[in-house]
Length: 466
Figure 1 (cartoon, rainbow, N blue to C red):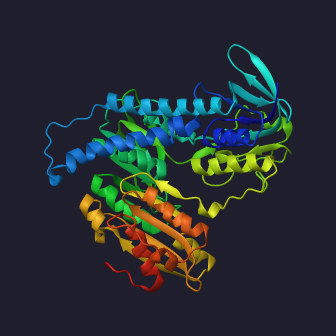
Figure 2: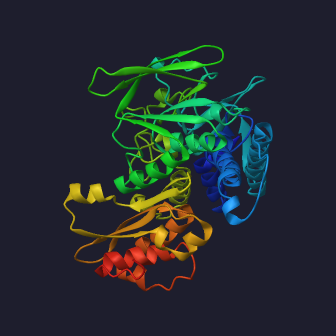
Figure 3: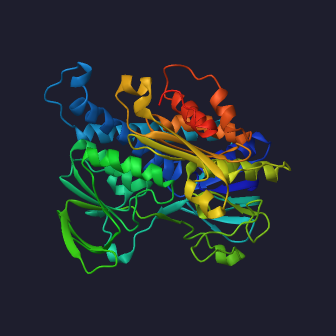
């Protein structure tokens, strides 16, 4: 059987790329190793984690905030099994939605392990059989897996990754999270809200080390109030697990200070690595860098003509929406188009509460690059809508070029900033200025007014409400 395009991997990059290729008139097949479509994001990543984040936030508010709203509650408890069931239902509905989209767009779906025979011939192996299909163009979209160094003794029982953490069916008393990045902080928030004592161990001297430092500082203040304990500039040097608990040995960097923490679980959240195992890439000569990422050119084509790679298996941020853009890019390029991706304007989000979002350059990057800039900040505590909803933690920070006033970066910590950030992305996509942003009429009262005020502060230090 021959196809115009074969996509290996059905995550956001793979299935979106497949749909776009089908829309452009190509005959498309998609191959997925697991029994459900959607990849890490839909099955054990973005979607299930957000479901648990929302559930845990409802519980946290019922316990800690409802009384102040005049809503009296008694005997509020966590039914963890029901919480997990709801999460699983959300995942199931979303994955079935992808199956529907494949049928709607007449994309052939193959379940099995894919490997290259030649650059155009793909072998698909299942328990029952082995078959081969041929494609003019191939898109590798196999995603990533958690990094689990041997020192952690990862056993999927007490020493776990985000995959196993999403299915814990009773609230732990104690959890140690290794890594103060997005995944660790999101899952740490879930369990801390439910009553787990959470310790976060981070090798760097701040959380969210790849984001603007103000974001990390603001979020850490909020998470500490929730009860999360942080060991910054610390390393995990050993993990020993038993049937019902584990002991995490921690060392303070550049000192001899060591101590052990006993917990129910040790969650490894130190990053992810590209997953290309079993693809037989070496047989066709696809080159990779020293971190195992597939090398691609400006058209996302690998060292083998006609074979493309997108998403977590190539350089750049490991984000579902980045992979989606790349899937569309490759499909349109194959069809003869001239697509474009501005990687600087792919936003990043942390779905804690308050949320964190960012787009463009950080202040640290502008300083390192010697770019003349000006900064404007506005705190949510000065915003009427935030006071009304009791979500006053956080701020919006706008960075603009000192000479041209073009917006270079926007960084937010606060309520619903995962959605609010798109205002900044849109303005920056059209190379708008801080003054442009400040002169747009914002509805009152809304959280978006914080963006207007921060832009006013950046334009001429003339924020109205502080």
